View 1: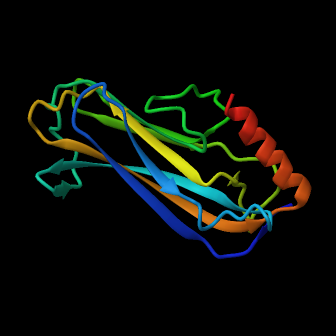
View 2 (view 1 turned 120 degrees about the vertical axis):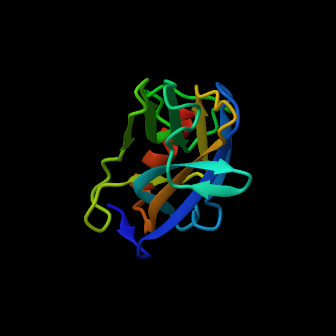
Length: 183
């Protein structure tokens, strides 16, 4: 069972979507947190996705009007612990940590869903978490929005994490699962 070595801290990454159907990827380095020799990993306890309109370096909290008020669009975002290239992966992919979807219908109404895929290695503090022993996370987002000159779409992921010490068996199980996810 993992034991937390730190309190919660947050890691963030942002990608800027400027064109329809063109996925963009950012990376989050975990190299200074993961230590193979001491069986130390990162427990991802929560994954939040945020969306903002970006125009000329200025960020707006409102998404209304991006791509036109009557435009239908879907934006997807995913965090994985294995690099699958700059593309959206299957929901069945073992490397998937969390994903989100933002949909604007033709009336301009927005809806958002997100999720986290925890492991079953027991509680870290009080919550289930996804434990990562790789040295990077990969954040990919893509939209079908054509933007119509109304600005870009900034997609940000915020991960609530802790550094954890794992038992040898749990560390090996996570490393084998991650290695198998490479295939």
